[in-house]
Amino acid sequence: MTAAEPTIVATCAGLVGGEWTDLAYGPVMLHALSLARVEGRRPRVLHVNTAGGDPRGAEGPEIEAAWAAGAEARHLRLFPHPNTPDVSSFVLEHDLVWVSGGSVANLAALWRLHGVDRAMRAAWEAGVVLAGGSAGGVIWHEGGTTSSFGPSISAFTTGLGLVPGALAVHYDSDARRRESFHRSIVDGTLSGGFALEEGTGVVYRGAGPHPSVEAVTERAGARVRRVLLDDGGRVAEHDVPARLVVAPADATGPPGALPERPPVPPGTTTDTTPSRSRP
Image (cartoon, rainbow, N blue to C red; front, side):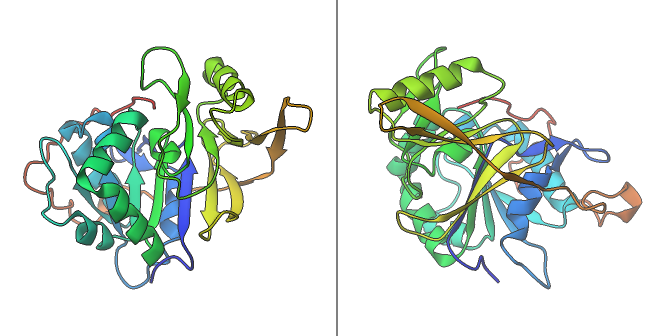
């Protein structure tokens, strides 16, 4: 099956440290996987690490984490060139797309250059769940805040626009993000949108200018905020109630409970150092 309607999960979450594997799918990531509604087989996850330069060292742990979560994973690469002759068909073979962090500006530019932006829209309309963390959450919006252009935080305005508004991530761990988001909303560079603390996300269901939105969190007490310009021209923040999602007890089992180690595609390394870069 596919998602019941076009679905995007934009987060400040993702992979976490594993107990029996180097990495594991975190609760918000597992929630995104569940929205694909796959039955009778392993869900197929497409990991996309364009924003971090397609580091090969991240791929082995991601594939193993997917297997431990009951899924199977492949990667879409654009460095040094696309690893598939038909990006659109390749994306459509999957149930969930997970886009990792890094430079959201580079991510948007390379996707447009290679037609990945069109492939993602087609997959979204077909019921593939599109998701990601940090840059991988911002990209689906009209824009957001980023450190893509240097060490300072600035506005990013060339997102795919599959969902309306802007997204600010790392809202509690980097005070500059809030300052930049407010400034960009006041001067009109960005429209209002959502701000995510670490471990949170927003789920958009439906296409068009007014999708339904649900806030989720894997950290009790972590906040999601709606950030808008009020009638007086001031920025106003409103807390959005976030539903706590937890990983199932059997999400990552001990080695004896896991199936045979997943096959690793040619060219994939098993270096266990994941990309930790931010948008």
